[in-house]
Length: 115
Length: 111
Image 1 (tube, chains in turn purple, red):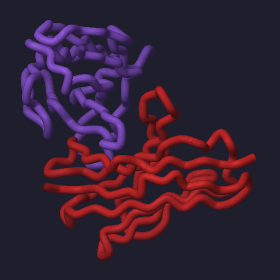
Image 2 (cartoon, rainbow over the protein chains, first blue to last red):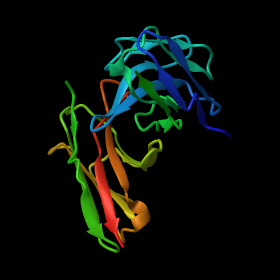
Image 3 (tube, rainbow over the protein chains, first blue to last red):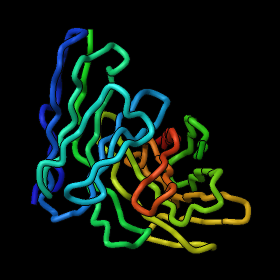
Image 4 (cartoon, chains in turn purple, blue):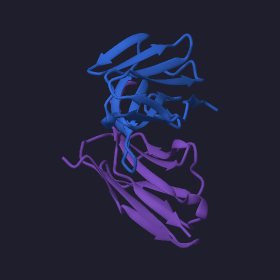
């Protein structure tokens, strides 16, 4: 089991360029999440997908779009990158079995720099 | 705006000591509370969760929850240099599958 995988691991973009961050999980989890982590700010939720076919905005959705391609895959797209989107991006998944103690499991992260 | 507050640290303790990490939260409706450990340059990994008032022990780790005071803590006994990391507190938000994270406390265990 690979758990949660993310590609790419590192990326440098110029302002205005677009890109898609890929995330996949092999744990048969229902819910998937995208976070960004900035120094001193903790993890902030960008978008989440409670189950296949649904997506919802989190705390900081502006400038991003997501696609839940199937149960395994959840992608994050930056249409026109800005320097403020320089961050480390983590994908996570959880079973969403209905219990509030569902654990979120994190991927290794993508370090994105926007020049 | 629901908030989770942690002292950023660093909290420095000698090897073998007890490290005490604290977290307060603003939403009285939060039901579950999680502690994650994050090594520098790595992703967060779950240490433990707690949802009932009182203490929960798992090896060298003890989570303590006081819902009346909106306070959750993590004690690490017999601290080791390998425990040096940032510890993130997370609480359930307005739904059970969304978490709100604190900014983390950096722990440094001195050999």
